[in-house]
Amino acid sequence: MAQTDEFGEELADFVRRVAELKAARSVPADDLPTVLDAAIFELDHVAGQLWPWYESLSSTGPSGVASVDRQEQQLLKALFQRVPVPVALVDRETVVRRLNFAATSFTGVRAGYATGRPLTGFLAHADRAAFRSQTAAVARGEGDRSLTVHLQQQPAVPVRATLTALRPSGEPRTAVLVVLQPADSRVPSPERVPGPMPTLTETTRHAALMDLVDAMTTALLSGPVGDPSGVLERAAGVLHGRFADWVVADVAGAARLSRTTVLAPSDSVEGARGVAAQDPAACPLVVEAARGGSTALPVRPEDPDAFGRDTSGAPILVRANVTSLLCVPLTTSPGPVQGVLTLFRSGARRAFSMAEAQAMDMMSRHLSLAMSAPDRT
Image (cartoon, rainbow, N blue to C red; front, side, top):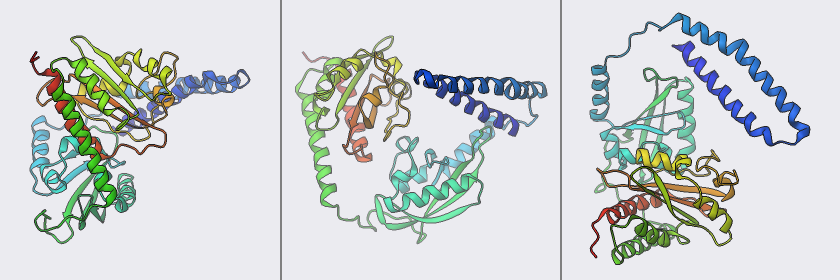
């Protein structure tokens, strides 16, 4: 199993290097020999090492390690969820993979909202760097750790976080199990622990969010319902400018997604045309939101192709200078995804916050209800 995992990592590294070589085709002609030499070296690497390695693994067959019984896996999942101690399973980057019921009550964050987001986002800013560093150390196999942190919602209450390494069956990477307990051995409650007084900045931002929600509700109630394109167009008009620099709306049809609305800054007319002409199926973030029904909130997106490319072949996130984005599926639970709303902030504008993402999540449900409601006219 270890050899298989090592081969998979080596192959993944090779695929990344090939992608970089493909991107290097646009270098000046004088530099192409260097790129060609690198490509030949990679081909030699495949022929001399990766292929014999693959043949060796194929000939040895299964490792003989018995797989964990399905019923036992279900039992372990049930135990994880029902254990009366707040527990989270995260990766080396502190991204939450699972959150049990006790942890949702303890942190005040829904498991569906926390999954896929860094656990550090729910901690006080002063504790995030230390927690991230200790998590990475545990994942590297440097031993279990324990430290005191503070939740953002209750910064006055110290929380003891115990970290231990865990290797899930059949997975190549080590995960980290995080156990959260009050440092004074008592579970904090809102009645016992008074919350801190909000600052003027926090109050102003909260008021701005409430104004936005009010404007969105007014726009939805004052116009016709049942027309997905019309509903999204009104919603985009509310969000554009005051909440996001770019607003892109896609409606889920019977066969595929279709782009209905693109609102951009006044100095990005050409860029807006390129985004409007793009096929939503070529946008990985949009496709993932439509398929999985989960919100994406990347800050300074690392993958320039996460939103695809325009008709000229340029990555849209690079051309629009996107520094933060929200990709929100429009759905009611239970129910299918009716569309996807994507919001960009660019330049020096402040990145989307967790509070803004939660407000947008609430508005997305209202939008979905307006899109699916019967026409009253």
